[in-house]
Image (cartoon, rainbow, N blue to C red; front, side, top):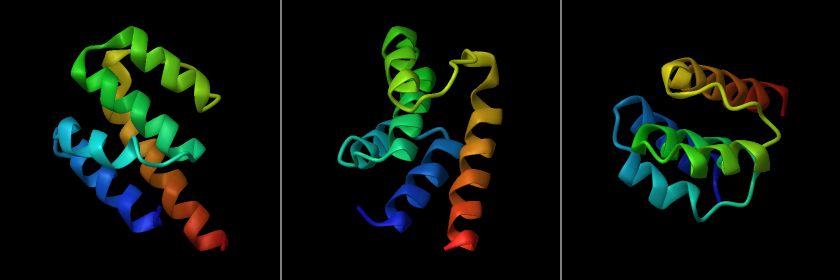
Length: 85
């Protein structure tokens, strides 16, 4: 899957459209997509599923109250990896 698709998913998550973001991230097997998948389920309120995806991404689940910080951190990581390429 193209990086631009995951950037689009990040934009959708920031806008609160977790349903559309879910369609994107569920098709990608990357670690970043797993993290975003966890964020999707956090926004949805399915915290058990969110914890699962955070685990797949190798990240600590910080809970619903940190979801906007998580989106910002994922955006920084996605764009930092672009700059390093």
